[in-house]
Image 1: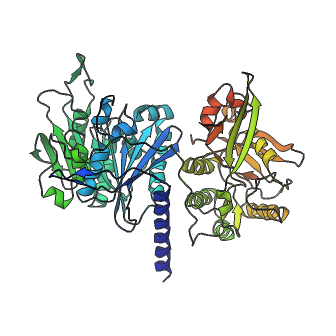
Image 2: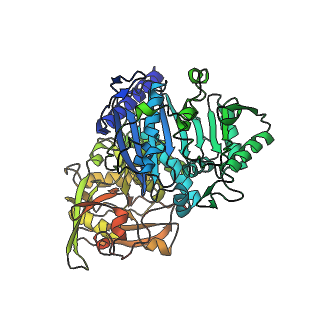
Image 3: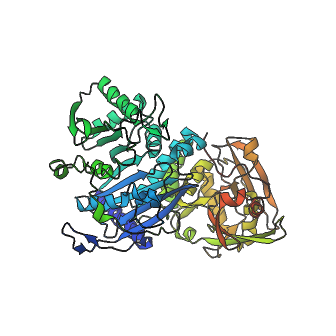
Length: 597
């Protein structure tokens, strides 16, 4: 009975979350399409939502308007190729003045065709990196860090569409999008079971035996898992008289490495042809190689002109495999191409609704009261990412600050803050929860927040309508039970005040600061202001990054702010030589976030 109730509640939550996604999305018009006989028929509308999932990374999620979370849902993670924007990758009808990049992939039209060919609940997330290059993004961030972030982005996207009970996920990408795919593979010991399809669309440049071990283990884990690779002989292609790939590079050689690696592991390939392609296959795997006898650049032609994306997403489905292949030179999706699409502005993912069966604050403390640091942090992260926070924390309040800049002009910043420190539980039973800066940063990254600077901590205190007086404790400072004791002291102190007003003076802020440049792998704390505005704690970065005590508080601040009335990100403000003083009294801020080493 209890198990059934939990499943029912979970399903209700997912349905509510998917409905929230649809209601907050921006819908494109349901344009008519031509049938085989030329008569237009209505096409269901799509909903588009653009998520700001990380500084410099957006995910544009395109969902069928009639998505039913109780039925199978297929989430297609499409990592963009080098040089292409999301709109160019989606494609559109061509007219004068429209760039050629809009006519080479047509992933939007191919996905509409996919829905009509038996995958009606296909949801596409177009994942775009700043600079339009996943290889450059990973190299700049550092590969271990970038790989961790890629995994988190994928988890964000699953959460954003409600993680419905019958969800399957496809990981795919074209060209440099393969770097995102390899980052996901390299960043974890084993690939997850909910990942059902991996397709490299001329994108497997960096394939190695390390990837093969994980891919084979993933294939063995479930017979429904599918791996696909599409490539062509690019060894001799030239552009402006020069070879495009090096003597060891390109996807033809990478695919040969894949074939050899699988053969060395005991795989016996079946070789045949599929239209213009040489095909290597075994159950669950299809490798397609175009011999390219005319030595053309087929890099994008295979994906768009030859319907490569559509074929790769349909392969392995019984109805499609029994019929003729779409892998040919006539566009099978021509009737599905539509006009220009206007993407809505990027917005952070919403914090999920608190589940009906979520733990109260006191119940959560009871589950971790005697836990060691690592399981306590894991439990804390699980609860806050799942939305187990009081409702009053969701009503963000605006803080405003102004300066006279070096240019002599007055500049103003407005940003939204949680009115109190991050807590776990319900409105009637919650606990303000200290946590490591990495746990706090993970929550901020998931839902579009940043951690404050020293100046922002002061400005938030100034803006607060409710100010407590510091109540230090001296024993068992890092004990979970002391966390609860301090929370209760604060609650007694704030008795009679209104929930939702900005509260300050009750904890130290975990902040970002230049002190972290001097002392890496530390946590910076500041504040705990007296009633006269003086902080107990100057900026201090003496504690190691895993240290937590009862006095540490997490104050999430919206990453997207307004400066002089115009939207501007936290990072962009800090990079502006004139406007950075709105947020920082430390000059140029060299550390704007907490990243694991």
